[in-house]
Length: 544
Image (tube, helix red, strand yellow):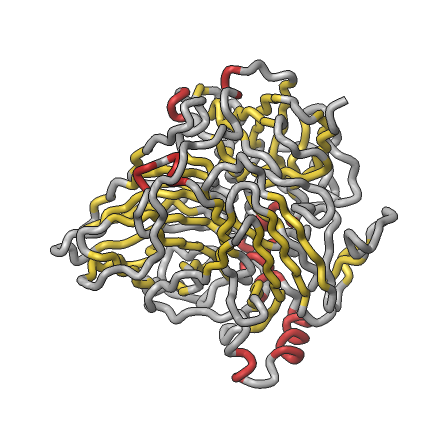
């Protein structure tokens, strides 16, 4: 993605940004309560927590916006009593109700009017700059109306829409997240900060090493540059923040994380950035520290082999594409340590990609004060049957090949006429950009097990994501992933093509054996790419 594609005011047209400012910012006092942001260099706060009780969680969320001092449009989900982006704690089997109210002013630009007949119970046919919805990323839940449906659900200004989610009884315990998913404006909404974490409880029963540990939830985000004309090279495409504490270019003042001396913490980290790829590392005195990984993309590592017991995978750094999550145990820095940092390493995303240089997120300080973090409970019961058990030994019923492509890529002799478009295509089918009124590109049946090979025909990395299900990574660039290193993911990076040789690829096993049936999407989770067309629909038919 070239620099010319970067958004203005976070992707919202200037006219609409001015409308938002005029409608919602009559006074500084009112602005101070809307989409709050931290101060650079301040201590990282914990997100507010909401817990289910007796099998249910009922939450009201208002969707709000404001404009910050740098002129950037901000968005947020906020409870009526002022909790912004609360972490939703649920148990397997819970029922979750979210009453979502769009409190943005009416949008000035209509992007599309659906050509299909529909019931207003499930959607508004008109999509504008201020339309919203919610996606519950990673959860293996229904794509039906009022659940995790993102193709047609639109909530426009002044409307309230109720989501009713059923968490599966065998949902893997771990970290998930929620964010807006209206095609064409998803990137702007996520960069505006409208994101929050979801935790499915019970990981201590799969991985006893985390039982009783203090847990720290960290949501990493990106936003348009505050200082686009800085003096320090390389210049990143986007600023980053940690739990809303900004770390702006070019000085990168790190936020502060205090850990009790001699302690271990359980870190639950989500890359909730719209476009920024992260490669996380924790350095003490310049030396990378061991990160004891116990979960990736919401699934405890090593937990799906039939033994129902997680395994610890020790890494020195963790690649997190946009939307990916990692959960790991980290030891506090020794008392003598003076330089301890959480950083992201430089990303080589290819010659056509964004710039993602090395930069810090936070300085970690060993403190004499005990932490005030919530602790995980002790192990309470044996693990229940795991959702993806034994699939590695099954024979897939179907093999498919898909590929990422960009119309501006010069190696293609006849690019489509509409320049600067992005595609994910099924091999052998016509190439087209996403439209919510498109028929499905892929149709399968509930209960199927399929292998998909996904190639990258472009000179930048892409991040494959599918809604409603997870997949098992079998191969990268034609090389088998050792069985002990295979992991269930919902987002995974496909390397970029250098211009010569075979196209880079991943091979993944898709599990449609759960209760999910209906229409949902798969796409690149670099949201500027998704908004420009790199998404398609899959239909899962009921058995029989």
